[in-house]
Length: 521
Ligand SMILES: NC(=O)C1=CN([C@@H]2O[C@H](COP(=O)(O)OP(=O)(O)OC[C@H]3O[C@@H](n4cnc5c(N)ncnc54)[C@H](O)[C@@H]3O)[C@@H](O)[C@H]2O)[C@@H](O)CC1
Ligand SMILES: [K+]
Image (cartoon, rainbow, N blue to C red; front, side, top):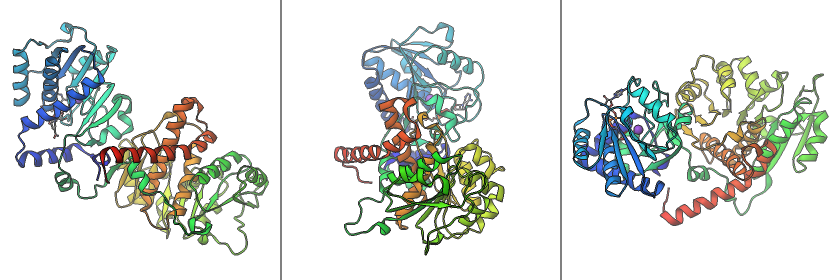
């Protein structure tokens, strides 16, 4: 397993650390090694010798910062230290004493601090356990307001290691250099505004110690390009035919929301699914045919309001014959009977948008308990709240875990950091996205894409892994489109056109990484 995909809580990191120390690694030696790596990285980020302020907290995060400060001092940077606490852990106190013996100025009050070109934040790491109080809170506000780039060691000080909550106040970092393993809080939306650009500093934690604490397949994982690519229906078998490559049924659209059906269809098209059928109200069938000439468009009888009134499938087909069904975008709420019918089918089902609203009205948990096949729900926070009104979603990881466990469905909670859980507690978090995707229709693209991938999977992959792959693919398309067209240029149609280029780029990146590092995962 690649360390980039592992996520830990503070308690887990502490346990892993204790195993390293118990095995004989001296605490001071590990700090020296870690801080050496941090200082090398900082010299790459700020290569010209500059003035740097080091913010030192009472624990080993402060110790790391002091060692980094000392190293930068010897490398020619002009260093000063801000160490405002009255008590420090022993190792940190020793480093503080040593740097004071060098030609490095130490201060306890922010009023006395000289100016600098960048700051290193070693106030608190994963040992922060309560709200930050004065005078440190005021100092943090002062540094945030100073417009000076800040490099946070491990986590921006003030971020809860697990939930990402802001404990009173927090450093707004420009870079976060996370140590050893990704901390869960850095993948929670609450913390996003504070993290800046985050990267992992790998300090060679033996996998055996990680497995001893997390198990050989850790339940909470971070989606990477490598993990996403493993659940794709690629390469295709040499001998195959269209029905062997999955048959997806999309049920979507209404006279009012015809575009949603087109966008969902275009998302499904990019998945490569062998056969695509799209059930829409009769009156919008010609529109769908013109945009998706390869798809089988099923024109259904419609209500007066232009919603699907009846699922009229072609002869000899019933819902069970599809490899997967995706239902919801643009349906309107007048489709309760349709959604009920789909829920009663034995095909894997993706429910989104109005499909979720109808499910919430029917009663999420009792309705899903009757399902005999896999269900994937893809709510945004508003829909999540309607589906699971009892579940608080301040900790999004816990929220999806609870929702999946209670409903028996795989739940994908949309947002800047998508979290996906299966009923057994496995969680995937998507660490990369772009706010360019906060736009009408981009969820429809995901529904189509996801449906198409599930239809092709033939039970080869765990369903939550496919959902994670779809989420990665979708956000990578958004990122690529935003890079080329700015964040304003990523309308849902454009997004569908970037799915295949984003996939090609991801596959190329993976090959390059493997060649350079010889990584096998
Ligand atoms: N896990 C590892 O393997 C390694 C960890 N290292 C560093 O050690 C850090 C963890 O060190 P610690 O456990 O000492 O924890 P921290 O340095 O995060 O801080 C804990 C200290 O802050 C105090 N504290 C907690 N909340 C406070 C608050 N609100 N106001 C004032 N004081 C508060 C605690 O009493 C304790 O003294 C990591 O984040 C990392 O920077 C590295 O030195 C080396 C390797
Ligand atoms: K920190």
